[in-house]
Image: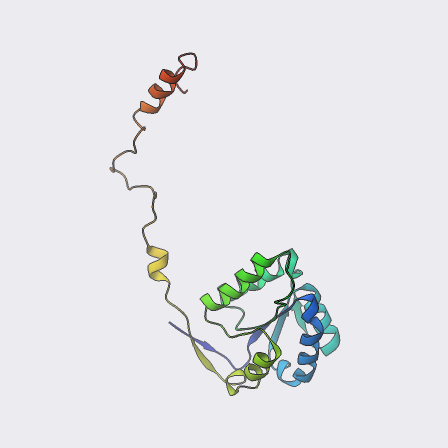
Length: 182
């Protein structure tokens, strides 16, 4: 499946504490290009960018309070087209699982991700950022329609073992004082 991205894209902006200043400097330098897009950021990062750039930024929760997950949900919903995520590879984060989930979902839905200043420079200056782009969306139909182990059988299927009362008999045999389940 293909998705046509308009020249105006929605960019997710996230930075860990030790990388916030780096993202601010990068955003200041690229303010003119960023102004041509819709910006969304996690709490503190979004607030800092809004103040520094004097541009509107939709601010979500702080990353550790669910903001990374909110951006991930927007990626899955198709409402974030591009992610700039300056994450700190040298500092453990209390929400490391959320960080991994955000990076994973960006790959799952095939959106561009810049994790450092050099990658962000290359991507923001690409002609694809200001033009239309046809993004390939992976087809997950087979995944969504797969047979799940232990899923309920349709009407008329055999009952699982123990559904005929054998479980009650076994319980009563183990301790006669318990009696059958009611």
